[in-house]
Length: 119
Image (cartoon, rainbow, N blue to C red; front, side, top):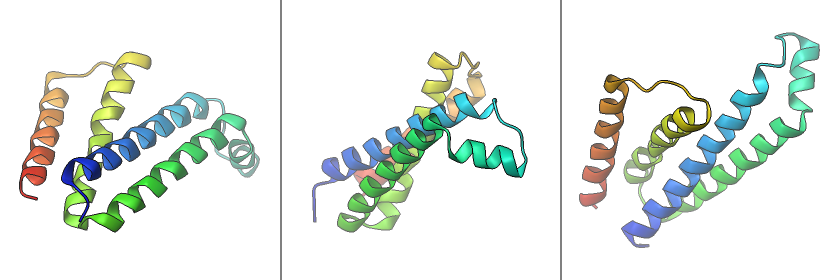
C-alpha cells in the first residue's frame, strides 16, 4: 500500500483542482440563461471547457488515489475540497465566511486528521 501522506497529497490535489473548476464555473455561469440554447452555449464556452478539463483531471487523480487506498480513507479526505472552495470564495469572490462556517471547516479538518491517523 502506498504511504498515507502520498495518498493525502494526491487526494488534496484532486480536491484543489475540483475547487478551482468550481470557481471557474461560478465565474462564467452568471452570463447564461437556463434554456436549450443557453445550455448549448454553456457547454461550448472556452472557460467552461477549461473547468471541465480541470475537473476531469481532478477525477483521474482521485481515481489513482482510490486505486491505492480504501474508499473509507480517500473519500472523506476529498472533503478537503470544501475547505478549498471556502478559501477561494473568500479571497477571490469576496464572499463572507461566517464564524459558523469557519467552525464547520475546522470540523472537516479535524475529521480528515482523525481518519488519516487511523490508517
